[in-house]
Length: 500
View 1 (cartoon, rainbow, N blue to C red):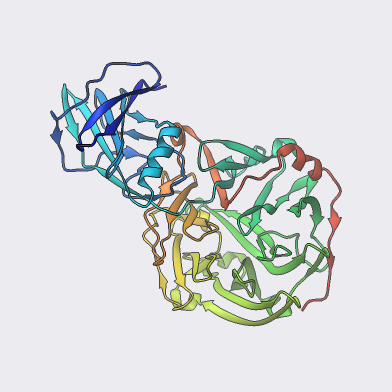
View 2 (view 1 turned 30 degrees about the vertical axis):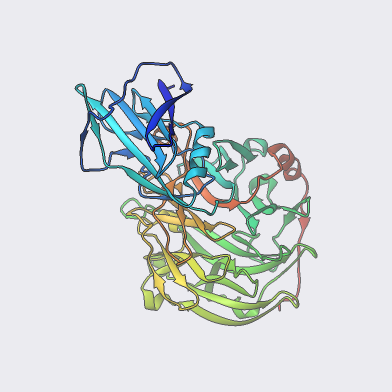
C-alpha cells in the first residue's frame, strides 16, 4: 500500500487556506513539507494512467485513482473545485488512491462544475508543477451498476468465465453467475429490459443449454429451438413492455487467418429473427424479413416499441466473407396485435461503403448509436470498427470523437440517455475494456474514460476481457447459487406459432 498522508484544507473567510486538524492516513505516515510556493511550472500535462484528464464524469462515480508516470523522488496531488476544500495526497511511488468518503464529498462540491487536479513532482530536490488537469462533473448521475462477462483472452479458453456486476459508485464487484457452477459451460448474451435488473435473461450452452429468464420475480429456463427455427435464440433485445423479446437465430462459423488484419472472424451462414412471447411461451417470425437469401441479426427496439431495428445482408458463400456488408433496416410493429408492418432501410451499406452492426437507440428516441467496419458484423474483432451516431430526426450521420485506432464495439445507453458505455481495445489492442462517455443534451459525446479501479495499476496485470457491458439502475438480487439451480433444471420447450 502506498505511503500517503491526506490533508484537508479549509477555505477561510478571507479566502486564504490553512491546514485543518483532520488527517487521514493510508499506510504509514511520513514527513512531507510540500512545495509551498517554491516550484517550477512546466507547460504540459502530466503523464497519468489511466488518462483521466479533460473528461466529464458522473457525480456518483468511484474514485478515479491513477498513477503518475513521471520519474521522481516524491509526488503530490491537489484536488479541488474552483472554490472550496483542497485535498492533498502525497506519494513516494506515484500511485494516487483517494478515500471514497472524501472523494464523494469532493464530487458533491464539484457537481455541475469543474474538478481541478494539480500534479507536483520532486526531482533532484526541486519541485515541478504541471499544467492543471480540469475535469467536469456532470449534474446527471450514471446508472449505479455495470454488468459484464469476464473471460480469458484466447480462442480456446472458455472453461473459466463469469457474468459479474460492478457497483460504479465504489469498487465492489460480485458474480451474477459463474460457469464453475454450471459444468464449465459457455454462458453469454446477458440482457436487461429498460436498464432494469428485475427483467433480464442470459443463455447457457453445452449440457445445460437453455435461455434463463428472470421476470416478475420468477426464474424460468426455456428451450427456444423448434423444428421451424434454425437455432435457439442468440442475440436478444427486450421489447420496452417487458413481455416480448426479439432474438436472432444464427448458424455462426468461426474462422482464423494467419495473414490478415483480422485474424479471427465470426461469420453467419444462416440467420433470421424471431419474436418470443414470455407470457405464452410462443415463438413467431415475420414473413417480410424471413428471406433465405438474406442474413438478419442484432435486433434492437425503438423506445416506444413501435419499430424493430436490425441489420441485414445478402447471403454470400463463406469464402466471400469480405464482401458481406450489412444494411440497417427497421420494421414497424404493433405491440397490441403483435403484428409486423412495413420494412424501411435506415442506413444502406451501398451508400456508406461500410457494414453496420450493434444498433442501439437512445431512451428519448432521438439518436441511434451503432458500429461500422469494412465488412461483416462482429465488430470486436475488427480493428477498424468505430462508433457512429445518427440523428433520427435529421438522418444526419456523424462520427463522434470517442473512437480510437483500435476496435470499438458493443455499447449501451444509460437509462437517462446521458451516458454511454462501450467496449474498446484502445489500451493495448488485445483486451476489451469498458469506457464511459457523457452524452450531452446537444447530442455530443464527450471524451471517454476507463472504468476506474481501486488499484490504479490494475489493468497492467489483469488478463481478462470485458464482454457486453450493460448499464442497470440497481443490483441483480440473485446469485450464482440460485442461477445454478435453475440451470440444472429441464427447460420448458417453446412452441412455434403463426407468423404475423
